[in-house]
Length: 146
Picture (tube, rainbow, N blue to C red):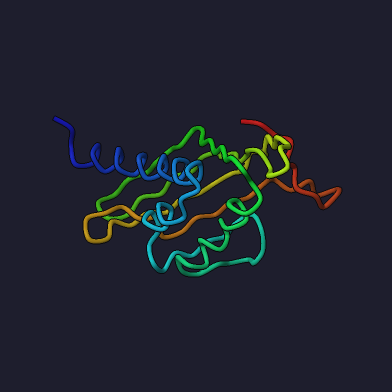
């Protein structure tokens, strides 16, 4: 029989899987259920910080506007667990097909997730998405792969 920690880790992994499933289904309400109402997000695009679940959904909105079909892949999710909080890091890639039919492979980004168990459910309370910086050019290194 799995321990509570093993059940919690499985639930968090399922939450991360639900990000991909909600994006691919173009289901913002599915995404909304994964985040704490007061999430703080440091996303890949401006602003520097988004606060609250509605702001986080606005960060995802361009995905639904510009892509006809969506792919989202997470690799190497590594979690550290405690009773009521957990954090994890992974690589993620968003891609798909633009409305004009152009395929977009996407780029790999680094993602950090912070979770809190709220009323018995693990929710994302903070996420941070980034790409490495090429200091010489001042550009993000978007051609790297895990």
